[in-house]
Image (cartoon, rainbow over all chains, first blue to last red; front, side, top):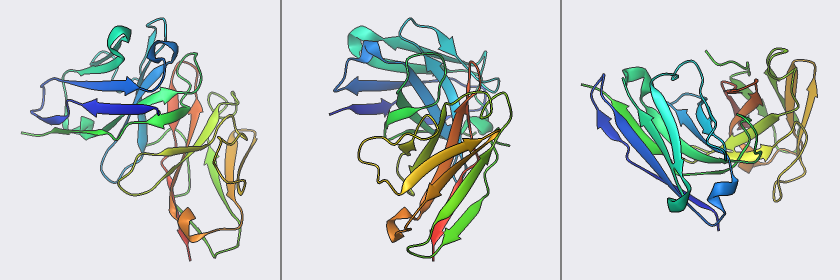
Length: 121
Length: 109
């Protein structure tokens, strides 16, 4: 059974940093592109980042230069390092597995339960 | 503001059909056949129900169907059931990035 379990969410002050982790199981992690998607309370989904099997990375303009996606295949783990956080980054962050293995195609067949990140003083 | 435009709400009675639109540009919906649709119930993660415009993952009922014309993709739910009441989001590949619609709340009357 495919499982994605996020951790590392919490409360952080504006301008601060936070690192999210996602532990994957039930599939060959190294063979799949992985993405992060976020959702602010009562709002829609927003694509945050993607990493390919060759460690190629992709970001939207809203987080480029502040967020860094990475993976450690030996530990079946995905990460999101978030710096210079602002209130606009407050959201539930989902770890997702991509159905397609090229680029930033936002087709996700499995989602984690989400990790809440709150940016507030 | 979301990159793709969806109506905020849609509704229909049980047994009826409802269509939700998702409008983008030539740079996303119109340029690629990588449009997906997700269903989300409150407090839960989204679920993939349509991918590559028209394809349904295993286990998704056949009354969910997708289509695309130009820069607009559509999700049709036929034979509405009470359990279809949820939020629906479209997404599209946009060349080195992914984009979502703002979501549509589907109400079954």
